[in-house]
Length: 446
Image (cartoon, rainbow, N blue to C red; front, side, top):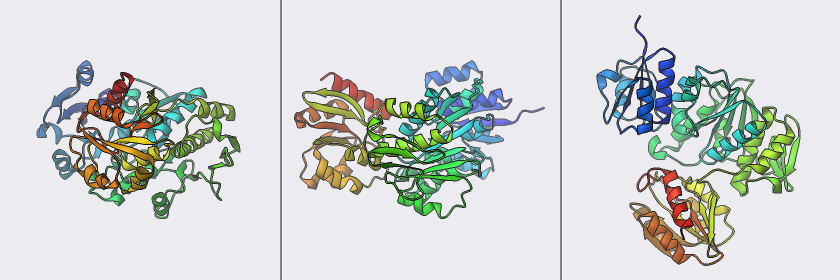
């Protein structure tokens, strides 16, 4: 009997994980990547004797698939995706595929900002509570690979990007967390905010009365979208302010969750600070509380979480200047949150691969908080056009070494230097981690 054939497009963490799981589930598997495959992923494919190609796609080996598993980074308008759709081949992603082979409860987190912090915090709380829990999605190891390796978890905490949600159809989140919706990745969505919003709202699909939807009630886009959906799951809205109907909020210096049982702790005891982190802490606490985690563990975990690398990470204080790495701020809204939490004159490092950014959102904060701007990108023209007339000192740089040197020149004792770029990193760096690591290395060498 011939085996059903699965083709995986893209051979990084998610693609290779999907390929290994497909092989273990008895499919014939072929992996194709238009780019070059990293050595560690090649060796994994070799280890399982999975056929692969790199640098091109061979049509006849792809268009005979029963199903295609597409890596999130591949856009819907890529030529091979268009051909596959024309051939009527179903296209899914790794998480959709992996979800077929586990009975674990799924706690899924999406939003334009705060995903990684919230996902990591929920995982931290569950681990502290002694729950049998895995971490997957946009963070950690691929869900498919963990399932292929026989990991039997009761819960998975999964960070989901809009790109991942695009190719998910039957997957169900037992607890869906939606933090916010602000402009991001619009270049992938025909510059349509509605298309991007629709992708984020897919986190609700397939939820039942047994499930819960945790969301920030003050987000104007979410509020508007909710009216369009006949939501079956239990609604769990949260806000920074105490208001009717909120399941969680901050009130009079206290962090409060009202349901399913009352919980509160002093806001001062939370390990994460800044307004945006209040949202993240509320979302994480509610998801944990709904999952039956005891008050004592919840209180301890919300108080001892160390935060996420590359997200408002204190690097060092040099010559009275505090250096902060927020390389994960790859959109304007993330930079807004970072600037909003600054309490000293700030030198802001901004720039990179622009995803259709509108800098008006941070204009007022730049005026009130920034003592200088350092542009860091291959092409900083758009930044110059927007910020040059604001009367703030500006430096133009094209490498992290020059950027840090300009920051040292601009910053006085008592200032903060904040790397919060608003942009993707691919113009000058391998990824946002590489950008953050280079920044930290140069700062620590000052």
